[in-house]
Picture 1 (cartoon, helix red, strand yellow):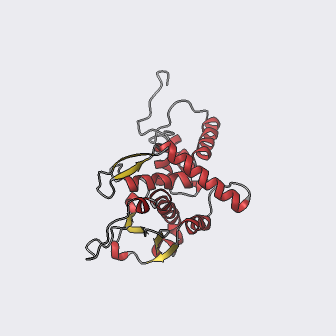
Picture 2: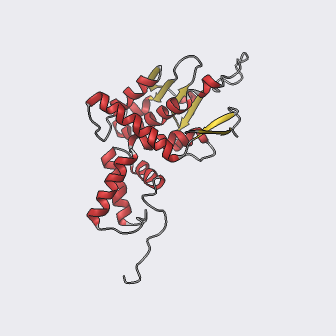
Picture 3: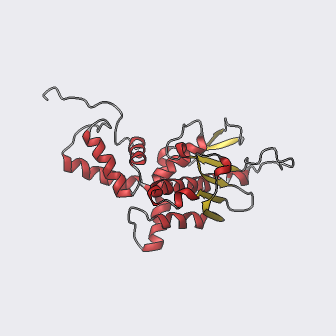
Length: 239
């Protein structure tokens, strides 16, 4: 069960504190249930159009051709919260219109869904006072930049949670563990797998392909699940 702690950012009086295993469990339940309702089965990688359907189910509006340049060149997603209504999600058109950016589109879609699902209710519980002078035009929006989509600092709790959710939806824990177990057995590996090793690189590439994500997203997910380590390769006494 989620616990609440003081919101040091000042946005709310209290904010939800989720353990990683809680986010993994909730995300896997959501995405597997959603896929089963669509197809009667769970299959990976998740289709990009299905990620859009997930947002359309839970948000009032999804615009994947938005011009977000007014927020800055690095902004690729914005979620707007409106008390009494479902959130509205905007995705930068540059991601949708360029096929080579599909992996970035997928991570942005799941990141914004994370805000919708895990943060939307906060605006209902603690709605902001009217901003009659329009001094804070973006206070009801979460503006997401490219470099915080998958691995924000934990002090930026909303972005960190949405970044974790991004990985947990695209690469559900159970499926990733099964794939990693197969890899270890096939390669006859024992002990930790280092990012600095050829095995580490091969595992990152394998997960990236299996779940249709970038190698950067794969690396971050494997690190957060403790399936690879940043430590240097250790040599055996007998090697």
